[in-house]
Image (cartoon, rainbow, N blue to C red; front, top):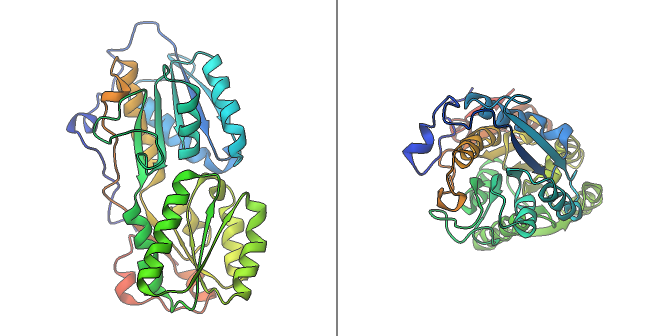
Length: 326
């Protein structure tokens, strides 16, 4: 059961955005590009939340808005081409999911407004210079922080005696590199032995996990990202196969069978991004709109997975969970 909600935002104005399209230009049909690093089949529910956010604000597909969607299917090298394609279409705005997609749009255009969601470390990776005044043509919703990545290791330690820690991330995701480094820093400070590996694609996961298991790894931090998101069920199956107690940042992974997830609600972040689209289409400058940062997070624990791994999750950890999957 859910006991907390995702509530984020730096300004009251964004939380009270109008629910009608009265201020829209009469007869105008807006063209919105969308760019996602992940795969459509795995992330459709997230973009559905974005569409619902638009509908709540009075935008109806086929009437006053048209979406031009592009998918990289986990291939970072495809993003520049897809970004340039959207620029050539002369869309009014581009909504992007993930840090790699946002960086690709930043390189492709300085004139078209870009609204991002499902990104992290926007300053460290060079997306914007400031949360409060991002400047330029980019703004949106951030859904990860370094503090969250520190919590992954904390929760994992509470759940399992760690003999050796594994850390895995997508090498094509600049934000994931930051979080992986933070997890490794935390492990060093706690005296936890670890092995860290980046992977270029989901095909590289099983060889790495198999090798980690031979190296006595029994606990895993999977730095989340769109590439992994599309293979979350397969990743959960591999973690079970190699008896790895795994934690990551998004509830969908725990629902797919990983032991735990801790982070902001992705779908809610996508829905919230629609408020930025609305403000920009009504005349606001992206660079003047503060970036929303998550302030509420959810811990999801899969007890079915814990049982399969032979783990007994301490009551002190269970009472902190927002949802327990039986």
